[in-house]
Image (cartoon, rainbow, N blue to C red):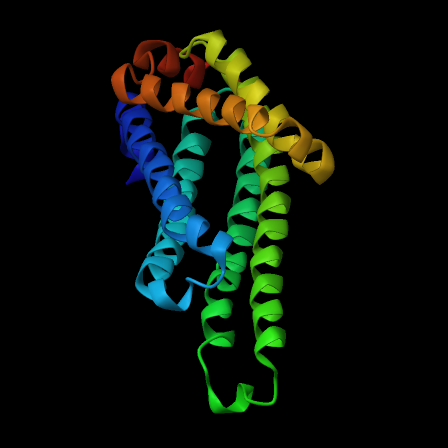
Length: 228
């Protein structure tokens, strides 16, 4: 069971799932993003576009696993805040899973089904881009929830005794970077710097968990202390 796994092993498993999140996000970006930008190539590269959809789903699944493992890791620091952080992350994951549908709808719209013959070609293309735009808007909403999640994780790391405080500071910056999505024009103005800050901070935590894990002795001491 997860609760019986050692804290260092939990941390490294979380690091593995975190790394998979980054890798699959990269696959999704390459497979789906470039094709979506051109629009006309969507049908010609359906398999690649569907690969992006599959990668999106794997990202969601991996981040849910990270969320569960982080809840267990940071519960000794503050159970209520760890639970709240998990709530924000799971809401973000739910939104991201839902908007994955918008990744496939353009293929249906442009697929040439008979019932779509009532629409003109220009209208179908406009609908396809509408759904892709909805995907982007939905992703921005999900980022807001992930922003609150990263802020809380950053605070929990700062309050912990088993991870370096610098990681907490970096995760707080990641949270602030994702929260720029509260104002899409502001987020676009800061792009790609806000994205780089958020990704670099989370990647740093990922590598630390993979290589160093957590200080198991200090984790056990904090777990045995009176909880807040």
